[in-house]
Amino acid sequence: MGNSRDLCQNAVAYLKADAASSKNSVPLAPDQLPVLLDLENGLVVSYVVDDGDRLTYIQHWHLVDAEMTPEELHKCGVENLV
Image (cartoon, rainbow, N blue to C red; front, top):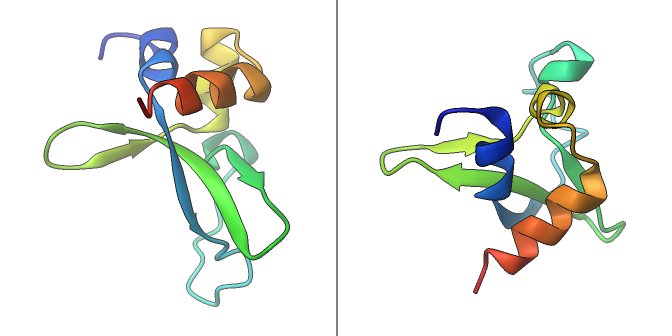
């Protein structure tokens, strides 16, 4: 993927357990954190792009660079599931 907008527009919503309280967390700068939607039930939605041999998580800096909101990313992520 060439740029952040393409990356964000090709992301899919990815449901996972909320690991916010994990002791194995690595401290990251706020813009390096993955974009997460907390479902407030122990699950979060993250947004990923399948690069074949790895998943690339959409980080907050991608949204800034793409000039997208978290809501726009979520809409793309859900639409890309089909």
